[in-house]
Image (cartoon, rainbow, N blue to C red; front, side):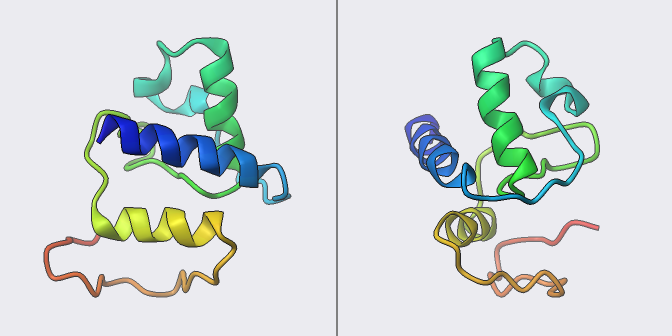
Amino acid sequence: MKKSLSAIVSLAMAFSMFSSVALGATSADFKDLNDLDAATKAKFDAMISAGIFDGVSEDTFGLKDKMNRAQFAKVAALIFGLKVDTSLKTSSFSDVKTRS
């Protein structure tokens, strides 16, 4: 999984340069990203500001969590510029619980 996330992170970085979305959050807002080196934090900041990643809670990014299918689908769609329906509140995946 770590290798997959690394590939996704690299790909996301390449595509995030073209995004101008600013959500206001940074890697500093997530306690589990505090120990990362500055270069890695900058990569995460770019993906967070591009809206590709948003963390699993207000102060936890979920760096060591496994990515589920719904999360992967969202990341892949955003990386490839596909439309994401953010109004959906339930997952079409029966094994994925929604966050509140």
